[in-house]
Image (tube, rainbow, N blue to C red; front, side):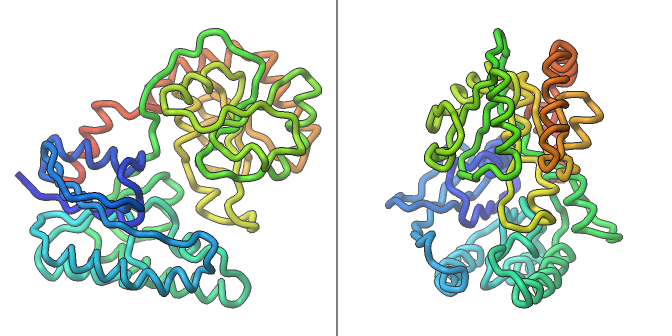
Length: 362
């Protein structure tokens, strides 16, 4: 049985994407799973998984350079862990910022395979708050590092087709597009005239705010699930707080629409936003709820337009966006029928798991 060394880096134990890969691979291989925790935890074995917690605390208010400087200790600890561990496959869910190439080189030098799961477009995502001349220099430097990581990887996994194509360019690489599929299908049942906005990380509404205000005038209720309600104090809303996954899915299933919108940084061209296929996009569709997405999100826009499972809007054009949403509401039965016809495409199932496992272990 092969041994897979899973480097979660700063992901927590039950991170949706990371833990899904651990669970899937552990059915066919031994998995040594490194994850981060802010608690005192011990290593332990359960089934085919050896859990290796690394305790770490980071001041979220510290500046990016200070965080990076402190990360040297974390990166050294993880690199030492990699070197003392026996494995056949090194599976990287992130890279070590102060040692970005070392794990890849170490694995290749010792005849091990490297699988790189690229959650974000790292040249822009890494130290994303740097801008101006320094920000551009950082992107150019990180692009060279990212290219080297890709060259050293045997297999690459991406969240979207756009992310994959832009990252590998003309290279002939073994790749798999593995979106953030929903964990379950939820029957929608009776719908409320609600628009839900879901997320673990609080992100304020941008240009969509005026659209929501206009839709409230049309009788819609705006509901926040998970995020800090105080950020939306200037807009009428209902707040549920954080909900366990199944309850969150039930709440989404009751809504008329799910607004999938975010702007992580000020730039409108931030590739991690544009090419992302976030959990809440797939969760919403698996819950039977049409999505509202910005036209600047090509990955989501393509799915919505090809399958007819939501509304694509230009948030800067409030009148047109409101009109499109109201028109979709008038033809709502067709949206629901389209989602029902394609629901299985949005959910993690045995077929997708088999494809993933065979890709990694072959």
